[in-house]
Image 1: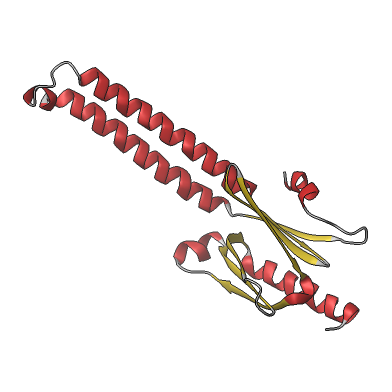
Image 2 (image 1 turned 45 degrees about the vertical axis):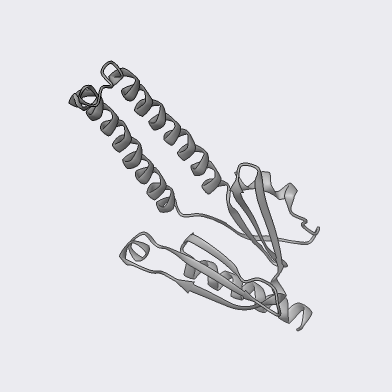
Amino acid sequence: MGRQFFKLIEFDENEELLLEIRKHPFGLLIIVLTSAFIGLSVLAASFALAASGFLSEIELAGSEKFVALGGFIITILIFIVTGIYAQLYRSNVVYVTNEKIAQVLYITLFNRKISQLNIGDIQDVTVSQRGVLAHLFGYGTLVIETAGEQQNYTFTFVPNPHDSAKLIITAHEANLKLHGN
């Protein structure tokens, strides 16, 4: 799937892809479970309201079907938005080569951010794993600090973040040996 984004990033002829980082599936599970909870809650609440007789008490008798239909439509919209958000989540990718780090980040369907960082500009790589679930499922946050006034790069839900950090540091050191400071 990641190969489709290669055309968005400039790669030199001698540049070698070392690592492709995609977000951990656990983050997608959180998105889907939250959406399912909200969607099913809306659906249950609308059906419960339609069946309760409350609408008759406030002089809205006969609108029970519209309330139930409205709840059903809202639930379908919630699931459609979740599908779009899940696709955006899966489309985010980070490439580590022997010369650069490139990130393709989809913010919305029509808003994409592509960032590239020379591997020699890295100052520090930090990994944080917060909570039991992050340790249990093996994901974390990877922060790449850069030289000067450049923005730091933060990647969330990185699978095996310690391995990724080691590979980035190794690529940085190899670049320093090859090109110097």
